Image 1 (cartoon, rainbow, N blue to C red):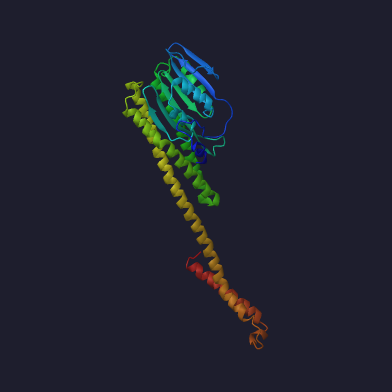
Image 2 (tube, rainbow, N blue to C red):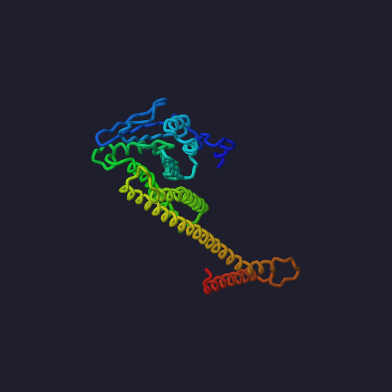
Amino acid sequence: MRALSKKAGSPPGSMVYIGPGRESPALIERISYDRDSLIVEQITSGEPFSGKADMINLILFHGVHDVQAVHDLAQEFGVHPLISEDIVNTMHRPKINRDDQHLFLTMKTCYTDKDASNLLLEQISFLVTGNTLVCFRENADDFSVKIKDRLARKDSRLRNSGIDYLLYVLLDYFVDNYFHVLEQLGSEQDGLQEEMLDLPAAEHLEKIFKLRRDTSALRQAIWPFREIINSFLSHDEGFMRSRSRAFFRDVHDHCLHIMDSLEMLREMNTTLHEVYLSLTSHRLNTVMKLLTIIATIFIPLTFIAGVYGMNFAYMPELAWKAGYFICLGFMAFIGLGLIGFFKYKRWF
């Protein structure tokens, strides 16, 4: 939340990057295609972003920290300053905006780090204007390679469809990332449950709270995006053909599936917390019961030892030759008798 303080006092539309610090320039790639041609170009600073007027243009913009490059692109396509502000704010809530010339939406995708130990969220923004779709990302990965491989096949549906299907493909790709993360979280919860049943430890409680934070973060990311897809299905988008609505309904179904899985993970997390508390309480009760039994056995023995440890001048038992052994035998009899009584009562 402290990162948002950078914008405090700034006028509306001020482009202030909010996100992890980066200094490298943005990596911008333009892919223009139709049924017969495919053109892939790298765009450097100062070059126009617009592609072929008679082809579908996909601009992959990696690195929204490059505020100047985002500003130049927004200026060229006539994007509203408030939309430009949302693009560079990587902590923005998923949303959708429309005007006469543009459709803008932003969402969150997720993945884990190399060790699969930390959840990472990335903001993805889309701008649809005319025959051009711009995809703004924070990072660069093999996503562009996968898209270019699909576009390289002339018989692929993506190559022979319109910009509405292209938008669906991108949305579907980033939504599917949730399933990989959910699978990892589920496996982590199952392993944690097995570890806890063997021996609950303080580190297990930390893992439970981490899983709870990750689940809540995913829910906050996917819940508003479901409403965005609902908006697509209920609103008459000018660039969307009727046959493409079935694909967006599929994305909506994926969102519902993700929400159900997250609810199940939340319930399992709550159950794990309760199991941890129960196991810890049971273990504490077991230890306390054992210590109580030991203390109960030694109370009469301590009493006997205390009596014969007093410094009175006249204690006839002290003069007995067998007094020491009689006292030890009596103490042993009491201790064994108490142990037998506890066993009879099944107290341990």
